[in-house]
Image (cartoon, rainbow, N blue to C red; front, top):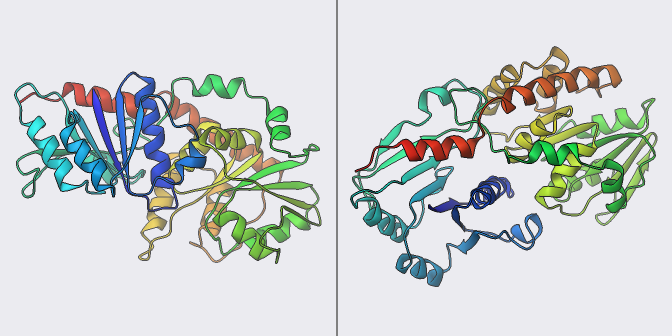
Length: 366
């Protein structure tokens, strides 16, 4: 089938990261995928070379939109995170969808959450009452952690890729002179408690090498340590800091597989940290009304996080006044067991794309 996926870049490429993985997985299954995006510049480093079977279209390009209107319409229109595709493209899809025997769907792919409402709303229909899609039906599809949700994005070969991963070779290829110290990856926004955590590692008993991703995480660390904007590395006591270049999606997976502790943010990297099965801490995207606090607690419940992991997440996300305590070896072992239990529980469920394709195929025909 032909799939059109619409993505608006909001969370510093996180939305695009999810949609690109989705499109790649469709192509790997022999489907035709077209990714419409309002700002695809990040794909130059996230997915250099693109992917056979995936076409990327700039939806702000009038010529591209006009060409798409003339081309064969999609069988499945995926509106990622309620991003509202161009009316002309909805109209083209609507004419196709109203034809007898149509076997596709209009899917609103929602944000990931473990909150109870996800199970209630997953796969529910929503009638379109106005605009070029009037009379059609959207269907909500929610990623999630329970069997009553759509599951998580996961490539069929992911576990095998990780099992064959060579940590030392990958680190050497990145120019990281690893000497056996604890490796910690950092992909974050600007945590208010970051400086306190860096001080703890600096004054600690164990050597820690912090691998910092490019962008906001690097800016936050440089600010906390009063480093020059172009500093490639730094040392503070028992802490050494290595600033990474922009990583492809596959190299980001390798980073998570390499480290003893991973700090992630948003949605896409949270899911990849879960599949890595390594200890991790999540910085949730902050919301003005503190609704993210509820979302965080629901996630911690879903993975059955031990008390120390809950306490760290609450401190790291500013839901409590206490500073986060840098985890020692015993605590990391506890977190690793929790991460592996959560990963195994998710592996026992079908992945998101498998569930979505099955759902679309089972929909009643006009």
